[in-house]
Length: 622
View 1 (tube, rainbow, N blue to C red):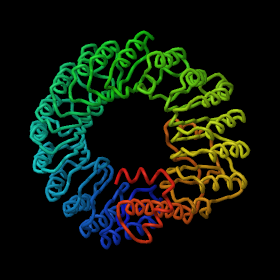
View 2: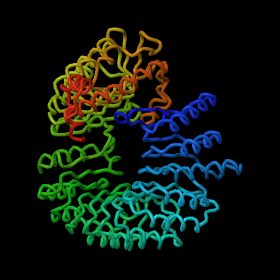
View 3: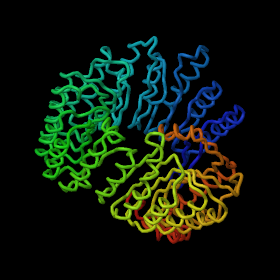
View 4: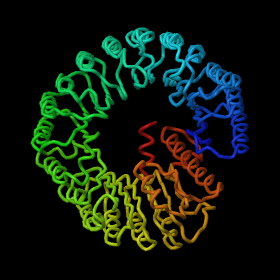
């Protein structure tokens, strides 16, 4: 784990990659035990998986001795593999120790799996924590599940008067416990947000919907991976339409409810009911009745955001929907997502372009967001050319997906079209081949002149010469707050330019560098350019001397980079994190200065960061 200063005087432990050396991990647990025992300024503890029995013993003892934690996140694997009764006893000791944390406000056990017989101990521990307001319950072992213990846990929830946020798997809806849980939901005056994930139970959802309808204090309802039958979908629509307090509804349905005509129409009618609902999110499924939703959008006068999964369909259907959106005065953003994304690959090029043109025609640019990774070069170029009001662009090109060389031929002119984009805020480009000079030059020119761009992620191989061109473009930018560059090659001159660029930046807050520094075998010292930057708040910097194309492609598709080969010394990484801690403390003290704190260190902190945008943003949050 990593110890970081969350706020001046308040610290937290956050998970890092687990060490493979048992001796090093054991020493870390001993140090963690001492810190939790001696330092009340530690307010947050987020732990990786706890597998060693010795780790469990030290943790439970440390929790018993600590009295300052506000937030605790625990993770451990399924305990059915644990045959030693002493190990399970240690697990129960940890649960018991949780009950001694009198000031605990947030408890997250969502990545923990407990035997059902441990739920009674968990209930007893929760009842001892008077300050608890946010709770994520653990999952339970599917084998040997005892519903009596689930009932006891749910009964305990009714005795937690301050719970405002609750997340759980759906075992709380099983017949034996479902009625009790519905009573808790219906009667709670404090519950504001409820999240449930379907994993073991196919019943009880109707009882829950009825309970939701009786609790006007509830503001958010999240249902994940549920399969709703036709009658349940209609009941949900009826409950939400009559609810006066619900503001946010998220349904991750995984292809069940919207596959039938009646449920699609029921939820479309819900949009047109003008309830108190401000945001509706439908994920994991597709909407097959877009005209019905279009009519509902035309009627709605209260909803602010709407997210729909849409399949491939004829252009007139999209026209009807966008015309309705243009007439709507309340909807600020509609997002198309889900299985719809696959339609914008290599097989339906004209339709994406048609939607882009329809946005221009109906004046809905800026109000419609298509959440898609475009991976067709023709689609990418034509969409950039036809619509210059896009705010986010994400492009993934793999030459293995198309005719050899097709992606390379289209990219240079596509990047040139970026020069006409004056509203773009986020740009994400991923290539599995070397970027060409024309592409790099156009991209660098855009980066140097744009004043709207905030977030940039560029992941592709680049020679040292092209890396220099790109860094020169970044050096001219004064708007970026987040920068990620991966797989570029740097010689000494390019590296010096990069550090000088970062030294002068007053807007950049987040930085990710996974690079190939040819002149250095290992990163061992934090450069002066970073040390002189007082605005950067989060940084990940690694040397990447070896790139493996086959592993890289898979890692990109699954957004996982665990297989990258990196080389940097622990001293370098400590130096980077110490720098981030210094900058965060400086920012907090600058905010305190503006709020009336006096003293030399507060005034000096203000002088260091007064020219950047981070201070204004932090002051708004204070």
